[in-house]
Length: 348
Ligand code: NAD
Image (cartoon, rainbow, N blue to C red):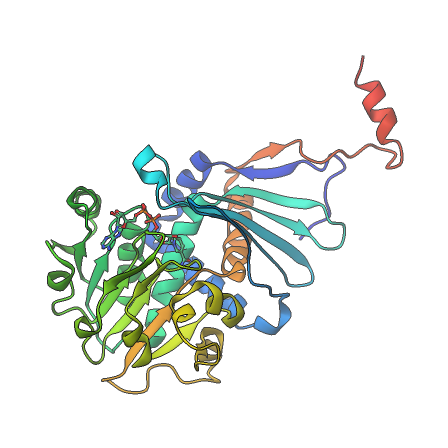
């Protein structure tokens, strides 16, 4: 990372620029790139300062900060989760993020991350499934057809070779929206009237619902042997999607255990219930799926290193394409001790 300019202008990637970037690179290609970037950083897991994210809870939802650093670069994401927002015409999840140089502390990127979170979450889920899903899986059920859903579908198509998605949402309008958006994707899209119908013949089940309670989106009798579960929506204390009995017979994979034990499906289990860290599977130091009949579960909550990897990728692509705006965000007088003088001179 180069030294900050004298003016310390900070590249800012807006929502419009992020959308242009996705179209310039191509959605499937960008999802694959993000999965590669995340896996590369998971493979140097020990280099990172890690902490469970810092939440501020309210009755309606949560606002969280997700910081990490590899010693050279620092990054954080601000993200919220408000399941009731949708009824007011607002997003459930919005986010932005920042990268800074550890050496000087100067920011080097500010970026929208609402779209980037949907992209990196899908890339992460699909890359995890490539390690964990049964060989030859082609059919995925997607329960919860809101903002994240299409990204998950395209991510699994691009990264795992899924060719069919079976969609279900308690709100048929969400399923119709999702099916409409996926027309032309090359996926066979099957809207379903119930969760039971959606999981028929699916080797992968993605749950990506939003409800601030311990929901049972999937019951134990709905999960057959050999299925891979990608549980994305349960990501906060008191907010889960799977019946506890499913967890008791699944082999469970997580991002960062201290965070997932607070936020993930496994908050329903004893604090010492065995889990496998995904980075170890990627590194080859822990096994992934062990048999064709094993039920595997990626208990996704989203971890700071995924956002760090995504932001570094965006910074590189923004520089390559020029798709950013410079923000006058850091006060940086020519004489670093003359901050006051800079203010005085601005009066003229
Ligand atoms: P959204 O509000 O846009 O969509 C959620 C959908 O779930 C809605 O269409 C709703 O009708 C549906 N739903 C709610 N309860 C359901 C049920 N019991 N069965 C079927 N459908 C149901 O939200 P979103 O932005 O798509 O996010 C979905 C979830 O994913 C949220 O809980 C969010 O916090 C979580 N999330 C997790 C990560 C991660 O890294 N793990 C990242 C982003 C979002």
